Each structure stands twice: as structure tokens, then as C-alpha cells.
Length: 373
Image (cartoon, rainbow, N blue to C red; front, side, top):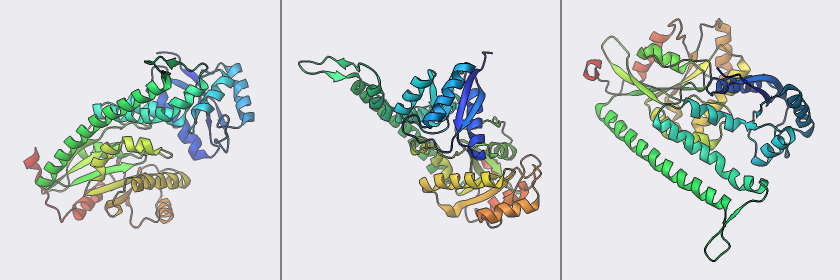
């Protein structure tokens, strides 16, 4: 195994963002050939300064540490412009990665299906396009390509046009995937098979619950974004043999830019079109963190125009020594009436969960499982 690259993480001082920034770096480090090792964390209240993103004084401090500690990369837990990355790289003389680039790297390394890979490529192009012209301004001697009897065209225009062509091609491929999914959806509607989807913040326990209910063996990890592609399996919900389709998909995260949400929209559509949506919240975490994650999930659901009436909140991971007083505190803080509390580890609340599914889709025709063996 290759030696880990020493990295410096620059993030915000509040515990939630600090912990999430560390988790992103650690998750990225488990998915690339050259893994990351955080040797120092620098924090700053604001990461929107014009020259470096971080303040000039902090940038100088990082420069000195990088020089002394032989750090290989600087990771900034915020969106940076090409100019800010260029300035910081020029000052410190090491590569700089911003939050969006880091998330894209994690996505790309975890994508397993053709559609997921296309979605990452689309997001990557949308990340690169606004930077193409800015990078050209920062590159000394921006080259001009000869043209017939005229001034020619700049290399940046050629690259920009090439990215647009790539984007069109990828969008066509994703449209094909969407058409196939719509055909599947129409077939499902004809059979009257209800669909239940599991949504939630990344690492909220969706895949663990999915595995328990469907007897699958999907990968489970504490790393962020272990699940990227949508998986659907049948779920028997009562002793009479009634079944529904259960769907698991990519987890949400705070400060996810709109273009990334848009890139995954075709995958999420299958989950969002479900008859019933369970929004999982890890109730073993700090109330402050739960509040941020819950709000982030709803922001994304609002952006995707989800019908709120079919969304039900589940408090997961109740086996991690979560007392009833804490459950009440979370329910009151998030203003959730009668939340369902479960533990995929012990099986607590799973029978109630199945009963809840059955009672909420009772108006729909539910086929018997033997018809779909």
C-alpha cells in the first residue's frame, strides 16, 4: 500500500463542520490510490475572503506549516474560485482542493453503475465550465489557435466548446436512462406495486435498514457516500404475503451545490416518485448536528419539489444508548409528531415500521409476493 499523502484541512471552527470536513477527507482517503492523512487542521470563521478564500494571515500561517511539515496537499472545506485556488497554490507551492472537488472525487471513485458514472461526469463538467475562462486568465501566455484568414480562436474557446459537446452527449445518455426508468415506472403502476423509498443524510443508516428488510448484502461503511446508485428490492410487509418495492439511494449532505443535486436528479426521481418516503435521522448524534442535517435534507427535498405529505421521519440508531428523554427532545426540537424510533442493529421498531407501511398504502392494490418470486 502506498504511503499516505500528508494533507492540511482548512475548515470552520464549529464542531459540526469540523467533524464533517474530517469525514470527507477520510472518506476520500479510503477511495483513492494515494490515501490522505490529516496532519493539521486550521479553522477560520469565514472562508469567503477574496484573495485566498481564507484570510491572508491564516494563509501565511499555513504556508509556513506546509514548508516545515512537507505537506502534499491543502484541502479547503468550502467552494473556492479558480483564482483563489491559484493564489493559494502559488503562495504555498502545493496543490489545493476545495470542498466541491473533494466531493466529486469521492463520488467518482465510488460510482459503480454506468448511470452513476455519467452523473458524476456531468457534475464534473458543470464544476469545470465556469473555471475554464478564469483559468485561462491565470495562465501566462494564453495561446491562440490559427484560423483560416482570420484572427483564429483561443484555446480556451476550443476547450469550452468541447466541454459543452461532452455535456450534451452525457445528457442524451442520461435521458436514455430516464426513459428506461419511466418505462419501468409505468410497468410498476400497471401492477399496482407500491414503492417505499429510504432517504436521509449520508451515514444515517439507510443501507443498514435496507439490508435488514430485504436480506441484501449492500456495502455498509462509516465513510460518507458509500451508496451512490439506486437499488430496489421487494419487501414482504405482513404475514399475508403482501409486498412493496423498497428503494435505497445516495445520501444527502449539507452545502451540496445545486449542479450536483441536478446531476443526481435522474437517480433520485425513482425514490422521489415513491408512494411513501422515509426520511432517516440518526438520533444518537448531538442535537445541534441533528438539527443541521434535518434542515439540509429538507432543503434538498424542497429543491426537488417533493410532496411533503408522503414523507415520514424515522429516528434511526436508537440502540446507541439513546434515552427516551433524548427522543422527546429531538421530536420537540424538530417539531415531529409521533416519530417512529428504530434500531436496525437490534430490530427494535421494525415490526411497527412494516405496520406503518401497510397502513399508509392500504388504499393501493398490493400484490402477493408469490406473483413476483
